[in-house]
Amino acid sequence: MSDLLLAPVSADDAECWTRREILQQPETLRATHALLAAHRGPIEAFLAPLLEKPDLRVVLAGAGTSAFIGECLAATLAHATGRCVEAVATTDIVSAPDLYLKAGTPTLLVSFGRSGNSPESIAAVGLADARIRDISHLVITCNADGALAGCASGNAYVLTLPEATHDRAFAMTSSFSAMTYAALAIFSGIDALATRIEPIADAIHRLLADTESRMAALSARGFSRVVYLGSGPFQGLAREAALKLLELTDGGLVTMFDTPLGFRHGPKTIVNRETLVVVFVSNDPLTQAYDRDIVEELRADGVAAAVLVVSAQGQVGDTVTVGGLEQAADSDLLFPYIVPAQLFALHASLNRGLSPDTPNQAGTVNRVVAGVRIHTAP
Image (cartoon, rainbow, N blue to C red; front, top):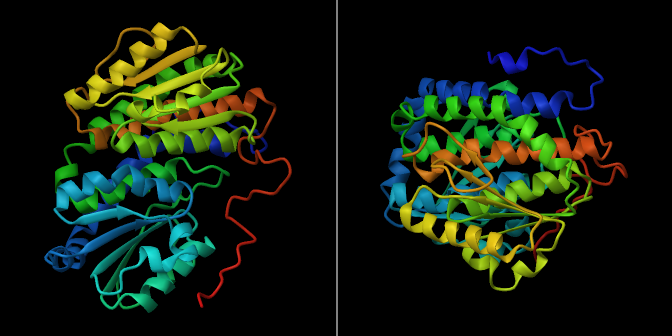
């Protein structure tokens, strides 16, 4: 276990679970890989015949942060499998099933759920069963006792991740990274990830040791707006980073996400003297050129209060450098790149006098969404 987790934390400490769950990610990712390796045979036996179908459609589905997993991975997994892979939030599926479910197309619905009790995720499984003739289910969840783990029928495989990934805090952190890693490994090849898990975990460990005080100081600067930018898989990560900050500050900071190229087309007007812009830089040379362009442009503008770069290759100026992954695929960078954003959100919450574990003071937003009515389509 990481020595970062050995510092005593009292049961009533405001940052108890949120901080623990951020810090435990090297261990939970390793444990997730070990679980996948132990179940490789049954997982591959389930998946192989499905991927033999040339017209297979893979739908990555979840609600909130669980939906952003799909946004991070869809293009990468489509490239790896040669099949149609799409990210469709369960909140979209249940509200407009006719638009998102294709009755005549063989479909693998991959459902992500921390608790496995989100009403939309459970309903999406039922809608898929009722509306798609050739439907299979892969459930990736952190809670063996959640409803999602037991609701898929027919051709289904349920993967329950290690108990430690079932985050107890309000905001998803280690559950997000573990479910993302599980899907990446399953569709890219569990054996292929065996040589990549240690460099990923080691990079996160170093970031946790070196970056928390820096993110605490940065959050104390009192920004009123924070923008996260990322290309390819990092667009989904930017969305997750923006949500994490919004959640943990109880809506106290204006947050936004976009791609570096898309940002110029209107959204850039959000930047003022109280804005922090964070850019996740790709390792792909072409994509990286566009990432660097927006960084240079923002710094030359001189309007933003700060421009922070998160990069595996180092950049000029204010940069969080992820060591040891200079040649890694961008999909591997998802895991260390989210860590500075999680730490920034944690300390922004503390700076506002909030409890990161229960930041919503009005009690109108819950760890597991409540108050959702599932309507029957006419």
